[in-house]
Image (cartoon, rainbow, N blue to C red; front, side, top):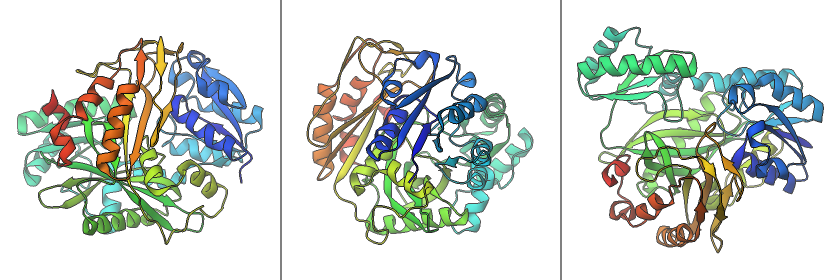
Length: 445
């Protein structure tokens, strides 16, 4: 097993990785920006190194500073968490070229799945269903219009190098497409350094379902169930649950098998997620993208399958067998994750500030993965996620009841907070029925 681990991330995910590392007897090393010096993940690590100022480009995305920290602390491995450098193939290659262990999929798999068009084509060749769309980037707006005419409106305009719900727009006619194409291309060039754009069929009523996969050290790829991620604002997730209320046993068998084929097609190792769109009317599903990293919402899978996915990541990176029997994976119960963000609960605009009160809920089936404590400051430099409230129960009804109680008991004062939104959602008849889609938040507003 790896003996020392540098966590190249911040906040709740860094704290969560450090927790598992220390449980396993692994020396945990944190890197942090000047703005994050007093956060819990820094104080809870065995060692911590400041890698730069608040600006992520000068700290958490500063490859030279992170590698220098690894060298100075004698780190044996690097875990990138999610976001920042987690899906940067060049960083993964540099880490391994420096003689360190990369706790994630290989750089070739990151590269293969990082470009949406290349990923679509690879998945189609592997027999994974893909939505009607372009097989090459739309070279200009006229090419996009021609593609949309063939596919049929409405269409989704997507940045080929995008991710995390960013770089996307919907067009219902040619005029809208011309506007969205320019917006998405410009955004993609600024954010990702790649203005390539693809055009796909847009499904007005669709569910977002994803599958957790794990590529084992022996070469096998296994699926640890699916997660429902349809509660979203601006194409970004707010709530996830497992198993999905929309997935029947027959559909589950098909979608998990497709996810395994997706992983096998790129020789996948370590943890990853195959994201799909599900048409609830036809029960057809289509490949959306593969996230070549640990997902924010991984705890719901941990509850339902009884595994620690960070531990499994470390075991794969160490060349060890998993803690579970890959041939006897059985889901049990139901889990729901609520993302607790420093943002307005109505318009979802960021609201950073000093945390005056922070009291986390406790109780059976309740877990909080948090990045802050009272007295810390939520700054405007990073994502607004403060914590993840995860609840589990023997079934969905029990999980919902525990979620209601936990939301009511969670006390946060100082920054703006979306806890009132979650309280509203947990009383929403559409959500409670389980028959909801990605438009649910819009219908609540």
